[in-house]
Image (cartoon, rainbow, N blue to C red):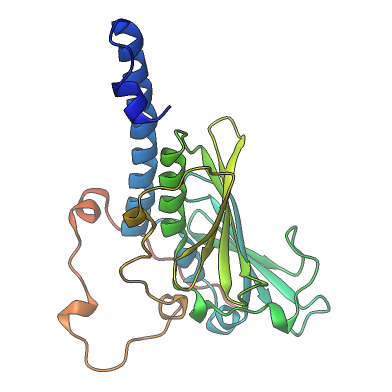
Length: 252
């Protein structure tokens, strides 16, 4: 029930009105907490898609074709990074990152049978991290009076725009599907929101103010003389929670 309805209910039934207000506050609080978790995950460098891409070898990052993850809250335990490998019969190699550490690479995947050169999007085109998609999911859930339980992530080339796009399936705490969001992974714009009747406020749909390319986090160094702006000071959240640990890249 919308918040306005709760506050303009029939005042002759005081206890009913209080229950309605409490219900609205509970949904809003849970959605807000999920939103905060998505924000702090990016600040702390813990478990986002770009964090996982840091562990890919540079040549593999250039041939990135697909990213998959399940049961993110908002970050998942495992990221599956699929790259086109012309040396393999199926044209595919899957890298698995678990708990922020590279664990294995293999030529089979549960998410694809084969990959072609046309499937390659390249890490350099990925400008929008999974943390932004998680915040959008929380905003859509709150706008529809629901709460997020977990997120299933998919990143691949969008057939219509030929650009990389996130597709996130939003589940409630019981595992039931609330809706599916499609987000342009280069600009951050919401492409579709299937299953959600209402949209959040426009300011909550704004693309990230500043986004770095995955190629940069995968190993490229900025050109020119370093300045103070290249190493920002930790903000309050990072000082409280600490930064993420670095993991050496896998040997080939």
